[in-house]
Image 1 (cartoon, rainbow, N blue to C red):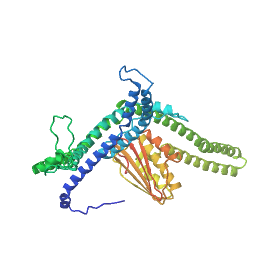
Image 2 (cartoon, rainbow, N blue to C red):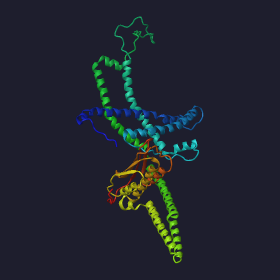
Image 3 (cartoon, one colour):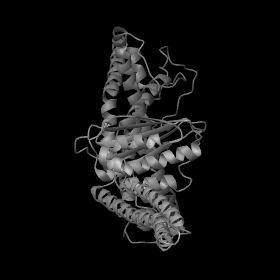
Image 4 (cartoon, rainbow, N blue to C red):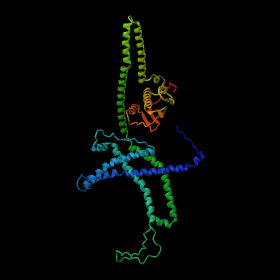
Length: 477
């Protein structure tokens, strides 16, 4: 466990607080500039679309034409539009990440699932892109974003160019004009000749103003300071407004969210049905190969003992002893089977004590920490118990660990369980079907599983299941 201590006293922290305030706004202003630059880079699809429209619509009659120079514009625009839509999604995805990181607004992707099949043709992919309403909302966002970003960049760039233009142009000479310099011939013979110039370029208006009036220089500097202060003050609000606007346009609509929810429920329902059928087959196989076989053998043994009871009592007694041992083993197997369906300790004492009982059977040292103030729903407890059971089995078989820690708690209306081991690490969640099966079973309850396993360890598995603790706890956990 990593702990941190505060070394600076409180008064010193308060003394440096203004610099932190200014620094935060400088960072916010820089982020606004970066977002504006990214927004300006997203104008390629708009230029492509305008090229297509220019090629397909004539200027006068606005009829579709595919001949002459408009045909060239149309072909060029179609090529750029195809490239621009793909690039637009890349820019929009990058914008979503920046908005989530800098503006604190997490935006989910609203796109429809990609077409499946092998292979997927280019035209199928283009049709999928153009038929998705999110593509056109991205195009609308790209237009608004590009215009806004261009305007935000134009204001400081224009001011900088204006001042630079004024300072680069020099003032004219204050001495008498150079008589040796040739004068330009007048266009009108009756007009007086123009005086010769000294050869220096004319001064810019801003430079002339500042050179002539020092008060104007002070006013200009004050104006620049006010502009910088206003930009620093407005930067956090600009970021917040940018995040909310991006969330409304780049996030999924209400209809898209409902459609995604329906698809998710359909997928989890199918997984639940498949998992239930697999569990029934496993129970049937365990009964057939275990307890059922022992009970059949015990019946045959009792039948043999009955036949030998009068002729050979000693042999009959040995058969009865064998039948009794078989009944004990069959009962133990039935208990194990019932424990695999729903452990009695889980039903009687709750998830905390069930995990402690599970930890006692591990071949390595296990420690369970955490308190649940009340009982979770039975289905959630069962799903969490068997998920932890499978994770601990993986630790025992593959991790090479000597210790394992289990943390259990309920915060933020969700049951959270963390499992940490000191093994070799290097577990890849994408390989195999064990962790994927756990993810599918937890997805039935909108639960998630996260695994972090760098080479050398430690391996940390965290599962979270949304639930509300209902009844008072009945365990000591």
